[in-house]
Image (cartoon, rainbow, N blue to C red):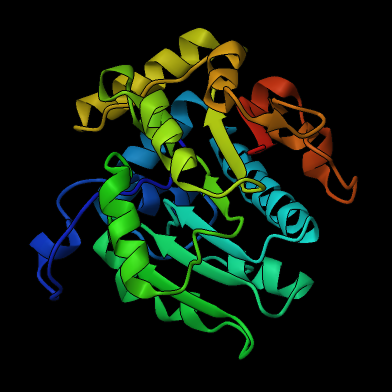
Length: 279
């Protein structure tokens, strides 16, 4: 499954334990799906198992990335000048700060991820414009209070002003027993009116048996995952004002019709996306 998770880690060194080379990680698998080099044999082994089940998973990753660019640009065009990206993943240009600072040089971005290897490559996330600021922190997406404590310590985000919150390819790694809806609600409650939420989420609506097999593959390697229906994804936006075209497959959210990804079949995408504003 495509994914960019965030969970808490401490310390920094070059040991196998620190970099978790013995266990596949969704951020590094996502890098592999995108054709990146920042992944280990264990990541490639699990990713290949997923690809055998669903060869289009690489398309899902590319669609997710293209959607992120469009959604981030949209939020910046609406006047948002500060962003929190939870579940950043391995840096892949253009990164979120490059997209929004192309709209407004003064945009500020805080990146959050749990994989220590993201920290190793974080310099690529920090090379923003002189007018803006970027930083990277490690925090647990399932503990919003810890996330906000880490973000506040950076003194980059003014929580009295609107924030663009990105939860891309993250929530399908938070099963129901970990209360994902409460987590999203907690994030949004801390943000000022005028803030935006952008998220993507894998779904089994179009190929349920295949996606169940993918979930089982992740579970066998120690990673929990849960795909959700369109109605279940829509619940993440409760009490927010959805932006047209509301919750749709990611390649259909304000497409620019400048890529072959705009024309792929719905089953090959299997990824819902949406942006909503806090009133």
